[in-house]
Length: 179
Image (cartoon, rainbow, N blue to C red):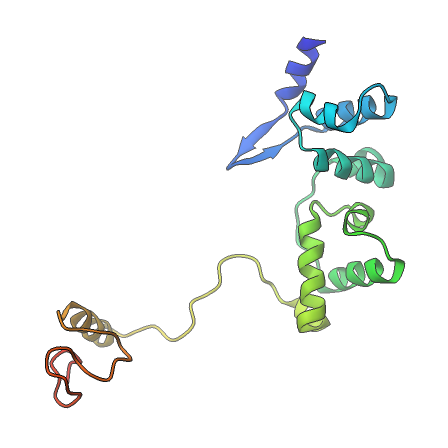
């Protein structure tokens, strides 16, 4: 039995702090839970798995069978996101049940879509929001970069929106402002 657990634990892969469990391990845990000889908390401790993960796998397995245990990362269309949020509110299902029904890897996605839907409207779900936000504003030219660097190197510099220079207490012909 111990060898079997060790073999199944090899399915756990740590990638950048995130644990990924093999489908075999998930199925083994669910079969053990369905047998009824061990409780959810004891099972989570025994296999070193989060209790919420077992509950998520249980719901996905009940809804989709073995395909529900495989993680599918992908992009979703705006129409799909709207359908998910509206389904959840029309049927009154929980976030976890909705996630299992549509076979979405994490309830966080559904939660984010719901927030966007009600705060910004349906149309906002069509926007791509993944990745780092782009910096606003135009690129500085070489001359503007040099002037900004010169200002910041000045020992009496307060900030760009400071009306006075610490050195000359005036905005007129201030050396720090590059004028």
